[in-house]
Length: 399
Image (spheres, helix red, strand yellow):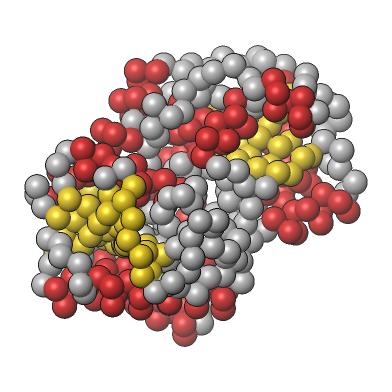
């Protein structure tokens, strides 16, 4: 088995999708006999404040589930604002490159969505003469243009040039959706055999069905409500403002929306809810991984929603997997691969993204319970069990 150096600016105890995916994959690779070092920064996502028990210093080493975790200093910024977030990314890029020069490895893997991590991985692979594997979880920088975080300008075009170059020089590329692979093949002319698709998965030992948490329902004063919940990052791509505005038009007093998490759009969502004088919406700050299960358990439907854009037709939001593993029906506002996944496996209801009439109709059908859902545990495990996905990915990057 080879030594693997994995670069990710997010890692546990952070609980966002890249942190969880990296942790669970690396943990499985350790079990398969690989020697894994994760090069990351000190946990601070999403508020840009270092977690309790940590200090933002130049360098530190700890061990988590057999994984050697090397943490380096970075400029910490809240998950909003272009300039400060860019400084955050650049500081990690530089610090991880310097630290990585002194870490022995055979393969270097760097994960996106922002390409500064990938640039550090590429530099390290060049100077250390090692193989470079690029993991793409988001088509960046296309996605930041779609959500309006940056307009088409010379800087964006430079990022697009870097994107193309990184695809070209990578030894192998891992994507999470077939759509992303096709973009690389058709637009960037990357050979198909250089790219493999390993979708996001879920740990079925962590997420499994259990009864609604009655203590939590009482605490939130939501007992006997039909709860539609969104649990995750409140970002610019998620179109949660559309959901909040539509909530105003729901006349069924039994329907209640629960938003758990934080992100760049959170403050605006709170302000919008207050302006609309909504009584059927509750906002909760981000919670830890163990607490997430409790919140999922009380949902009648889990909301998975993105802006109406062709770029998101290749998205497979990881929160779908956790909902499916816990047998919570999905209320999906994402076209393309996500829609196919939910429809084929009878996991929930689809509505047209940012389409008010379609959204209201889906909620009506859900509350009337006219739709049947099918949660075949063995079938789901064959598709989204993260352990098996991690094993297959390890074989690909080491081949």
